[in-house]
Image 1 (tube, rainbow, N blue to C red):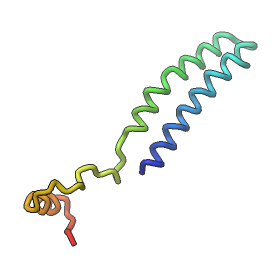
Image 2: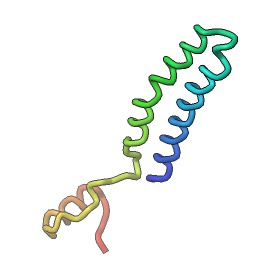
Image 3: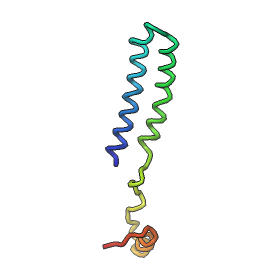
Length: 85
């Protein structure tokens, strides 16, 4: 689960770096407005990448950690529909 989130984050950030570098290395030679547009798109990607990298998936269940109180843990397990072994 963490590898999938990390892969998505680095893919988005790699796309961001690619857009920024290619905008000012190659695209500006043909069209400065397109290069600026690419930089604006690249500017929006990092916050989205942070949200994707920190989003919990359906398999990420942080509440599965036992609290230390056996009665409370048993009660929560019953609510979640799972049985302790």
